[in-house]
Image 1 (cartoon, rainbow over the protein chains, first blue to last red):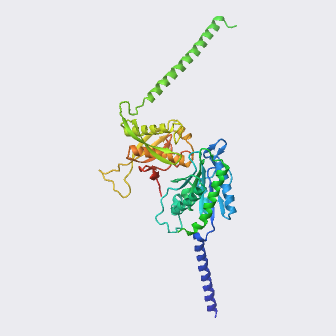
Image 2 (cartoon, rainbow over the protein chains, first blue to last red):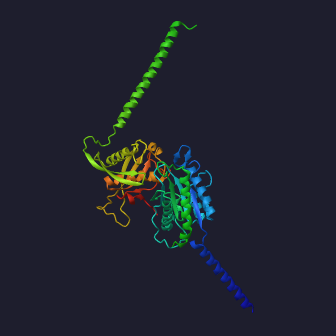
Image 3 (spheres, each protein chain N blue to C red):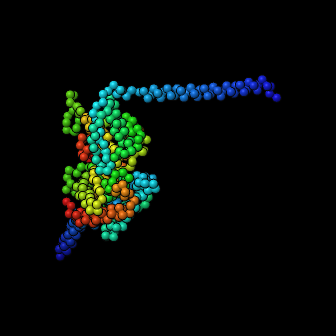
Length: 229
Length: 214
């Protein structure tokens, strides 16, 4: 009788082990991760970024935009991680680490400039990795973005649609910029420029339109992201 | 009591010392001016006798983020590196105009341009008679110009791509461009555009980008 008891106990342990492994593997799939967004307010501390106008630096503008956007997203029950929430200087690597730890479904690096018009959207200029469908345990730090570049392009398209709907001029391109390259999440850069000659970057209505468009895009992405390969 | 003749000698000597010091300072300034004049005359191949030749400048436009080819003419030196530098001087002259669609500070931008041969692409064996005709241009920008460059992802990228594509449009053997600032490596142009990477000039501005190194 004892050997039967031992066999049953062993079978139960094996079954529990298999269930635990399956749960771990399944939880690593995009469809089972909670939807989270990472926002990176560019520059900070001694790195002021661009001088947008007298008394307003890029670091201050991006932090205000990130905070405002985070508040709106949280109101839509979306979990948000900020790479910085104060006027501190953090490295590009630390920003990418923060994004990757958050296991975010969308990573937005927020910039601002006094040159050009409207919103400039950028994705990494890294090429798509050779085997995008293969889930690898390790990614090269400097080129982690190449494994998700197709998803980043779709996220960029989603944001572009929302901005155009708000009738904001959009310009899209590819660039090489930290922390984009080391982000293992769908990631884009959003650079805010004056809307036109009569609408400066500080215009409250313009800023609200940008936040509204980004909230719309990121809400839609919460559904579309789960359908990504 | 100091005798009167000693007082007189003292003052005469003092005036002589001051006069000689002023004379020496003036001599030194004159020598420095002559030295600088010699340095200014360091030969960039003379373009005085050259005929104006048609050139293509790839002019950046901030409003739509594009590069537009503009045909103009310029007197260019025959030597290739001097020619490349003269092309960039002509390019930045366009941006120094206040009504430029990509306005930049009216400051000397380019200190030097060097051309380096590129190795054969991977997979192609290099034989004694077969070398890669492509070259990389190393463009040494002035630190003062960089300090006054507008900051932003688009505006910085446009400046760099404009340089790379203008060089490629007129000297097609230049397919890559690397940027230095005052002869030193710098992380970014004005806080955004990565200067640690090489910029590719493909002839098609839409395809131009930084070199990816996976």
